[in-house]
Image (cartoon, rainbow, N blue to C red):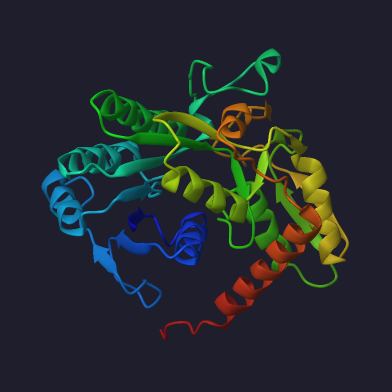
Length: 315
């Protein structure tokens, strides 16, 4: 099966590609540039907001499946966030509809699309009315709406609402990624870890599990068009996870709260319902934090050493 993957070099995307390769899929990746790490069959898309360019690329590849992971959690301006998170998806869906037979399109969305959910409605199901309260959540919901519109017109589309993937190499713009990076850069004598509000509960997923489930949803013919939560159904306190990450460092580290540190979600407690996913015969294993957290810290330490070793430009 020929699968077109956007966002293939990203945190989740790289795991999706690994899964596809293991299953013997013919993987074609797309991005703005070619790098040394680009797969052998990589296509350059200069402008994701150019409908004609997207249409030409999809027609040339003629994929049987499209996994759309490209996106951004933040941008310099709102227009850029819409361009990356909504317009690209809309152009991709339009292009897919022109390919015969139509490829199955998996749009990778986000739990941020739901917005605040009362405790009484947790774990949240796909039927809960969305009311996102961040620009990221709003633009990802826009992607979902384009997907549902395309599905209503006959294109096979599945929207995977991924909750909180964690693992080695996660972005420092995310809480645990930032914490691992900060700890990695502290001396062995310890120091201070600067955090935002840690009194929150999240449905964390091992990023490798996220990749596996996304490939199952993309390639499994029994999956119907619609929205599917990718979650465990179990919440973990961010404070507890942070303390366990600190323990991995074996250094004396103090926590320092800074009100200016805010993430992409300001929801205090957020857990998803995996009932629909389980009805498809799929389930997400709970993270093995005893394995994940040391691996995250080790990767952050390696990244910190490599960045420190980079030569600086001469004056």
